Length: 114
Image (cartoon, one colour):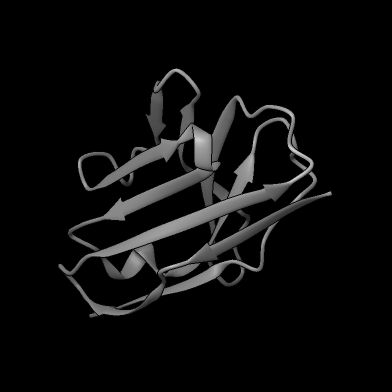
């Protein structure tokens, strides 16, 4: 069993910043890729950013230059620093593990006001 707990969301004005965190625990043998996803009302869940155990990162075009993903392998933790937030960033943000894709946390709500 794998548990994922996302935190750090909230209400912020456009241009503001938030830092999300996800802690993974349970029967985890190894984690290659950790990622952040988001889902807005009426839309499909989409990949925001991901990072491998070697530190390689990928970002959605919509967040490049504004968001930074990081991880601490020993703690099975992944963070997402979000700067220059825009109203279109409003969504529920989830983390996921590339080798345990069936597990999702409760998500954390990010709301960016105009």
